[in-house]
Length: 171
Image 1: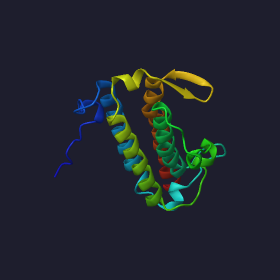
Image 2: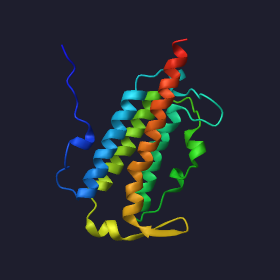
Image 3: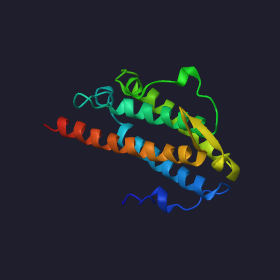
Image 4: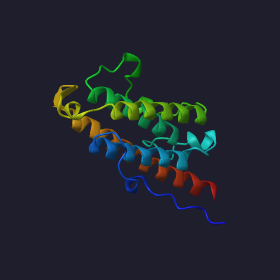
């Protein structure tokens, strides 16, 4: 029996009922989520929190950071204040914590769902509104576009780290 070939998100077409650009972002986030699930969901805690070398991040930290930073970028891109409890430096967010991998993955999924819901609610005027990010004022579309770009960047790191973990296990 052959495994059915899954159509990659970028070939799945428009997401009904949303602005075309939002549709693109939602498809990109589908790819991020599928990448995270594929490369991180079956890891043991040791593999999930393994740090391959000084200055690198464990898969668990990357998963946590993708979810958290995506949600923070959505808040900033929609002109909302980031609550104090969600303000965390990337290095701290990506540090090994030893939390149960399934708990971290569930939190990641919840954050991505918040982001998807926020993106689905956007209309044209929301994209061109000026928002504040630190000392910078920029059109919201640039901040919102960065959600998927940033997430894909770190999803690629998850793939590489997983391959290094697997290679180390084969020794």
